[in-house]
Amino acid sequence: MSEFIVSTKQPDDKGQVISITPESAGWEYVGFEVFSLNEGQSIKKVTEDKEICIVLLSGKASVNTKLERWENIGKRMSVFEKIPPYSVYIPSGDFYEVLALTELQLAVCAAPGKGTLPARLIAPEDVGVELRGSGNMERTIHNILPEQAEADSLLVVEVFTPEGHWSSYPPHKHDQDNLPEESYLEETYYHKVNPEHGFAIQRVYTDDLSLDETLTVKNGDAVLVPKGYHPVSAPPGYEVYYLNVMAGPVRTWAFKNDPNHEWLMQRMKAYGSQVK
Image 1: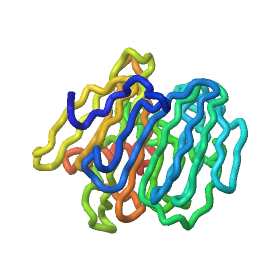
Image 2: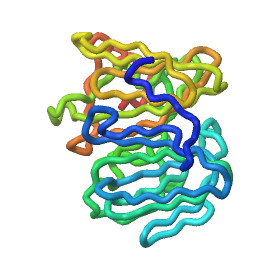
Image 3: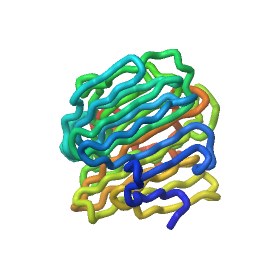
Image 4: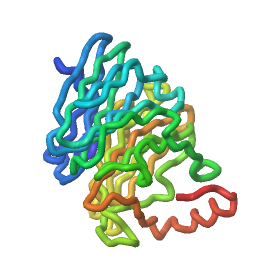
C-alpha cells in the first residue's frame, strides 16, 4: 500500500479508526482523526495547542466544551444524504466531550491554534453550498470552515463527486509559500464511496514527477497530500465523498493549476460555471 494512504482500522477502545498526526505524516500543521462510536459511547479530549473542528459525518451527538454545550445535534445518517453536517469549532486551550446519541461517525480536524476565538456551533444553515466545475467536472461543495469564516489555521470542506466525474480538477497544487500566487497548505482527503465496495482514483504528482503516485482509494481511506497536484476520479457506478482538511503558515487558499490542463478552466468558464 502507498505511504500516502491511511486506511480505516477496527475501532480501538476509544472508537478511533483513523489517526494522522503531523509526526506520522511527516509534516507540520494538519492532524486528522476519525472515530466510530456506538450509541452511549463518548470521547473527551483536551485541545492543548491545537484548534479543532469536529464534523459529524453521520449520526447524532451532544457536545460540550469549557463554556458551551450543544444537545442532540446531527441530522444526516449517511454522508450520501448530501445535506450539510453539524460541526463544532473548539479553540486551543479548551476541551471537548462528545456523547453519541446514535451510532456516530465523527471526524476531528486539527491544526495550530492561538486560543483567541470562542467555541461555536457550525450548523447546516451556516455551511455554504455550491456547485463547482461543469460537465463531468461538476461536483458539490460544502464549505464547513472556509477562508471567510473565523479560525486560526484550519480550512475544512467536504466534496461530493458524482459517478463518472472528476474533482479537485483541473489538477491544482498549493505547496509553495509564495503569496499572493500560491500558499503552502498541507491537506488530507478522507474518502467515502457509495456503494461502499467500490473505489476512487486519486493521483498525487509534482511538476518534475519526482512524486507521481496513482492511488486506488477504498471506502474509509484517508490520503495524505504533502505537495503536488491531487485530482480525484469517481468511476461510473460509484459516487465519491471526501472531507478535506488544510492548514499551513498562512490561512488562505491560493493555488496553481497544472499548466498542462489550465485550458480546461477556459472551457468551464464558457459553460458559465463558477470556477474557484
